[in-house]
Image 1 (tube, chains in turn purple, green):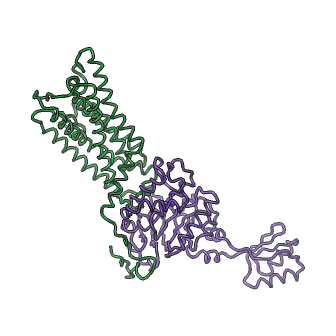
Image 2 (image 1 turned 180 degrees about the horizontal axis):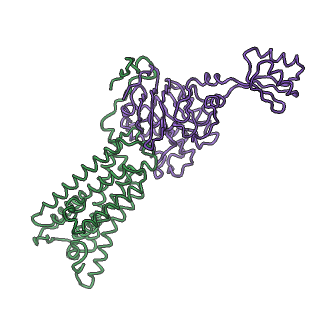
Amino acid sequence: MAEPSTAEPDTVIATRALTKRYRGGQLAVDGLDLSVPAGSVFGFLGPNGSGKTTTIRMLMGLIEPTSGAARVLGQPMPRATRTVLPHVGALIEGPALYGFLSGRDNLLRYDSADPTADPRTRRTRVAAALDRVGLTAAAGKKAKAYSLGMKQRLGLAAALLQPRRLLVLDEPTNGLDPQGMREIRSLVRELASEGTTVFLSSHLLDEIEQVCTHVAVMAQGRLITQGPVAELAAGARGRLVVTTPDPGDAARVLKEQGVSDVVVTEDRVTGEPPERDLAEVNAALVTAGVRVRGFGLERASLEDAFVALTGEGFDVAG
Amino acid sequence: MSRAETTDGTDVTAGTGTVEVVGVRKPSPLWTLGLLRNELVTTLRRWRTIALLGVLAAVPVLVGIAVKIETSDGASAGGGGGPAFIAQITNNGLFLVFTALAATLPFFLPMAIGVIAGDAIAGEANAGTLRYLLVAPAGRTRLLLTKYATTLAFCVIATLVVAVSALIVGALLFPLGELTTISGTRISFGEGLGRAFLIALAVAASLIGIAALGLFVSTLTNSGIAAMATTVGLLITIQILDQIPQLHSLQPYFFSHYWLSFADLMRDPVYWDDLYRNLGLQGLYAAVFGTAAWARFTTKDITA
């Protein structure tokens, strides 16, 4: 297996031309070059079926890549699973629990599966992890009696049994109510502030936008873009929005001023802003006798950026 | 593993506060046994395991009561038919141990093993817990060895449950004392107990083969039920094929072919040939299917 040559000193996850073709011939991940900086909250964004989970499984050594290479914490995967994975907490495709065991016993079992976990501190670490996700009161209950949100929390607790250098969270707020989502987000921020790199996959754009510092976008097995969230959102320009009772005149003047893609909807006229001072555009509107109620730029959201990048809606890949 | 493996010569782990030497913790080699301990306790605490052991414990009770009722008018038990040793039970309760083991070995015991072994990997895959054990990281070889060790421990426990249950029922319903071996010699009750223990071990060892077979089947599928059904189905198929005279030349390679050799421990002197053949065959099955299971499990894509 070739070693990735692009691994930078502070890169926690680095893949080079990572490719997975399943036995049916389906290309799930196609030449992925991913680079996750240390200390970032890295959003891994893409519609369902875009190859996110396959990528995560390759990073965790569960799936062998067809070609290409992956490094986690500077070590090649899947060869170095034994040395790397004790430093990685993971929630992959939702939680999986032993229904016949209590929440606490589930964590004790997962902890005993790690040969580097000290059995002398096992009970205290399990109690601390349960406390951190707010499950202390339900720790003695059988896991099959847990709600989906509680199972999700227990899965997170399993990822937090040890101090981790990297947390891989695949859709961590799935099945949680808004309050639970907020709690998870603040937990992610808290962990990141302690220096843990968080790799967070999601198909929810606003979730990524709220917590992530960096983002990578996947569609149909390919990496479309990656970089700091601010850069990506800035890349997609905002739209000029004019609210006016004279939309027809406004549209004509805006076109004269170099505004392209002008769209009129009732009393709103929107368009791509020109490369000039918008104050002049506004002045031109007023000079032409257009009555202006509102004039401004609508900030581009990550969703706009995503649509601009993929040229399509946010649908399930076929 | 060297940390300076990148082709451009950069030591990817040096010089930063966040990415440093992997493996700072100094784990004790003994900690690796934590998984085995947890696996044993988890397996024995499952209702399914308790139910299987309950069924196994009930067999000697049923046999004992049936013999007691049948012989209450002074007639001899079995009338020449039935499992081995059944006719001697009324004279000596210890024979119930041998009868119960002979009655459960062809089906009940291997079926219970098939359930535990078949579910070992496939059941974890089915529940999705396999991926979390592997990223813990349990290690694929370590997890497989743990599962096989647990299955073998269950073989011993299941056999002992049958033997102890039979000993208690036999002692309650029938007289105990000196006993007559198959060869006609008399041995003391103490030596009889020793032979009973050896027989239980021989029976438990007879299950090594099907345990390995079940474990291999378990690595082939993500459905615990399918793996259990396949293993038990193979057991029944082999038992039937072992009865077909035309397959005479193949039969010495069937894992169940020498199972009843444990009765030779009741000869005086003990006739060891078939016992050794049985052990060798079980070892062969463990080696072949254990290797196959390892080869399959360590290279498999975990998609469940």
